[in-house]
Length: 154
Image (cartoon, rainbow, N blue to C red; front, side, top):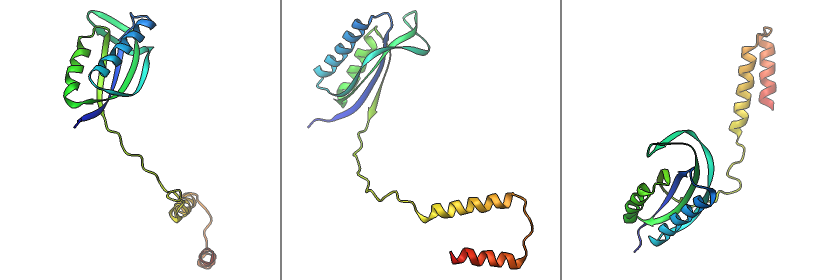
């Protein structure tokens, strides 16, 4: 029985590589994952992007790097050796592997989000609050009773 988890690898490749070299490093990562028996579901070719702050690796500062990601499934016991190989790769200046849970898609019935009467109440409450805040003329008890009767008849 296979005991695979879903993961996402996000990584920054050195900006000293040109575009073709970055693509080759990316395909090498894909091949390495496939050798480990991984199933790749989504991937994005690395693209050169500016970094939010300079990153130092091996006495070099990087202000730009190639960003890419790969979503894959891999057996639990193989993720540690894969991480070690990423640490040894000098062209990868930073990486992060997260465990992703794939949630089942749920179909929501079409009438599920109908407007309820509570929205009408909320609108009326806001109107009454606005009226309270505004200074107005004083109303006699008789006028107030008439207005209440009008409202209750509606």
